[in-house]
Image (cartoon, rainbow, N blue to C red; front, side):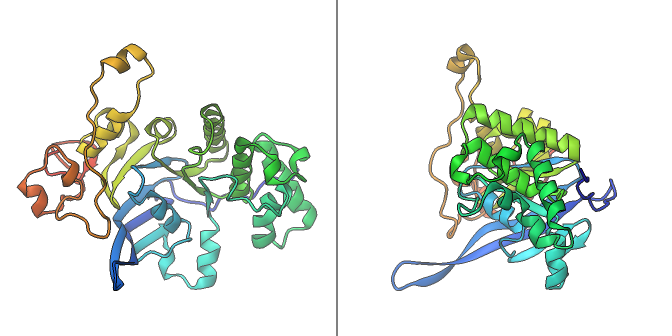
Length: 335
């Protein structure tokens, strides 16, 4: 068999993926008569991701995780800021070069079934990126590479002519992973890739992704609300709340020594496997609902649910920076 194409070279000192003040706002209408309103879904997010590493993006529903992931793969156009891939600012590229560069970023979606075309066979689904971007390859070689990547994700030739509805959820997600990797894509954005699967299947898919990362040198952006899953895959973690990153650092620092009150509440909400320890715990429970993103509170966006909030929190938005000698960056006046 012929080998899959190699990655584009990237210096180890240079981030393979970087964002600078990346933002996304939507125009929404509310009330009657309809009045346009601006909803800031993602606000000035700075990320750095190095080759072969995994960056976890965590937060509760509505925090902007999925909007951020869709900007990274080019599904949504940013309202502001920039995305750099291999040091190239893709926002400055003409359309043809933009499409060529963005081929290096693929996505594994949350719902495996809805992300697969029900009218196509497994073989056609996985081969489609090659049919679109590598037309110079002969059909025989494209089919060979399709079978090769299927085998790498634990499937075989017997699945080539099956339809998505004939597969289990775990098998469908393996097809989604194979489709993302058939061109040996260096960067894969995973948007809640295991949240729709049974727990036992989640472990299988996570282990598969870790094996593929070690084998192929993949770089992941792993979006999830499940801290237990992120703890097993991520080297670094960014915690998001209402479109902003409120804490960023290594997975060990963020999960074992959380500084931001929101991160502390997220970590405390995770169940402990030992039933005796779990019953003895008294985790802090957040009160109140997520504020209206179209009408956020002044100052710190978390202050309406924070037990440490004071007048200073309402007066100014805390910057994301290292505080009190902490290794991670935190957006809190008192962290």
